[in-house]
Amino acid sequence: MADPESKVPENVPGRYYVDDTCIDCDLCRETAPANFRRNDEGRRSYVTHQPASPEEEAACEAALLECPVEAIGREE
Image (tube, one colour):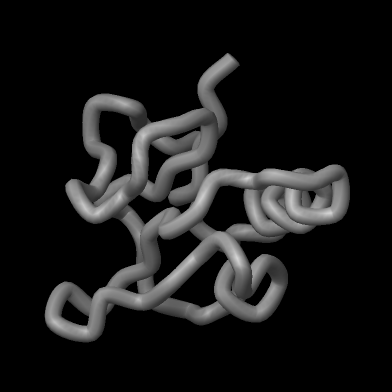
């Protein structure tokens, strides 16, 4: 499970976030391309845009559930 204390600083404020356990696998960027981007220097993903539609919400939730290292978190 992602650790809110270990969020990467690139994340935009909001419900979804990526923590520092990200392994740069690209799954979240493929699953929710409108919401996740890659930090080329840090070689990790981050949330660039919080979901603004039901479709984006579903894509972010799918990315969270599919992340192989559970680096994506959601605050309630």
